[in-house]
Length: 176
Image 1: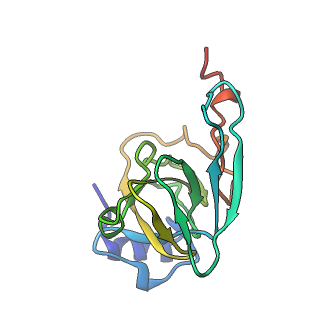
Image 2 (image 1 turned 120 degrees about the vertical axis):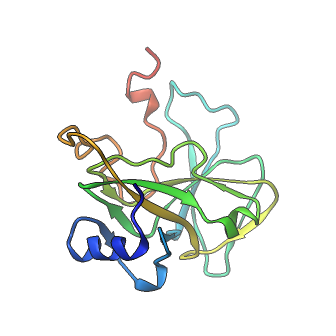
């Protein structure tokens, strides 16, 4: 079951959901809008090899904006630190941003119970698109979980980051 916007607010006030910083202005009927942090990474490898560390170019998004290019993969992060030990998070794009040709979180929208951090965002565009720091780029929903939650992600490899992070697939034994 998905939480309503007012239930999200209630659970933030009850410390069952963490959204820092939080603003009522970003609350929707059944989600919360998150904003883009001011730094993105452009993947610079011509061929991405999951058995090796990915090479990146760090880009500070100027207040005038930065133009994303097609056929490139960018990693950004949420400005907000978001998480819950009680609910499952799901990060998705906003329809108004999707209508601009931005694909966001295509492969990894589901978070784990126990995660509380700034989330890495996968960004791809179909044509050049200007982005801005702090723009409302996506939304997060919170879902009730059924069953025992003692197996959670508090010690997960991506749970400690406060900015975008490249794939750790090469470290995780994913090749075996």
